[in-house]
Length: 500
Ligand code: KIV
Ligand code: ZN
Image (cartoon, rainbow, N blue to C red; front, side, top):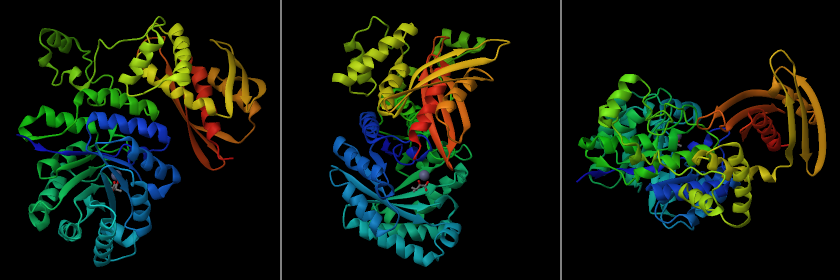
């Protein structure tokens, strides 16, 4: 019988902090429901005091989800805890996640405080949160660089104050796996409340040196019984530990004797959904969910796999929900087939929204022979653009070798039509210059990436852009079988986000 590792998913909090990955409340509910179907134990739904959007999302996710515990983040500040408790009211199972920095640099530079005062503030925050909820998790921010002896005193004090879970974040992704494992072991051996089963330890590892998953597993093998993770490993900077890696390591290495409640066949659809809603491509060689994770291209490997898949494959792709025979929709597929496929992918759609998406699906299916899951998720998110004030009406570009590209563009700005043309150093440059002849603002394109969604020359291109305007950087996204149109759409998406 395996020991149980609780999976705490922070895609909607730590993951969502990534610039350009922000979701609206409806999208967050969609992800939360998918996480519930995936079998996570805890969903960190947001940081309610940080914005009205986060506050509302925690309320709505609390109503939408039944089984997982809903967790809200706070600083060790009473007002934060009041607001988190209010946002969590409707949750069937609720947790407040409060904490403070414990490393010497946090204590000195962030708080201008002392070690003793930090322990007092930590204990006060846990006791205050306990007035609202039974389940209180404490995080010792920058625990990775906190001296073990002092950390043990912090953990002991917060467990005594009533913390049910103590999170040991490697906030800067600095630790080596052995060092992080030893930290967890030290705490397990030196904190009375832990051996007495009053609280469990949680890992929370960042990936700055590419060691987040290794550190998490080292922590788990040394006694931690909760792992904080995100889908696709998204998160600030180099990201967080990825859920799919931890779940599959424990499934593959049964000898560790620890397992999770994750329904692994939902891993791939969840990965696609998060990538699509957050406009965050998954690197092709990403473990478990990358496009190439199960693609054997060298002759020797292909030969071995054809003789017996176990020669080079340690995971059956079907076990993580990758089905080569997955239904692909075509121009002959009906509305019901689209509705069904959307539902399999975790998107419930009906009525006018389904009608509109079906019309877009037919247009895409005319251009592409087969419409795959990524295309469908992209279409499902396309209605986000419908409410924009600036819309692309038409775009015509003449380009080729040895000629200067020329673009004519038509925009609909709050119902009024505008047209302009321009020539440029390539079709995208011409299109953006034409657009700037209508929208005459000081805008600078800072970043521009194009990626194909799947394979084939008829594929949909996804474009991510960052445009600087008035001292702020705005993130935009566009997707189209025509990459010049996708680029114009991404630029327009940025413009629609301008604050003034
Ligand atoms: O990385 C970190 O330290 C965190 C805490 C707020 C839990 O995300
Ligand atoms: Zn973090």
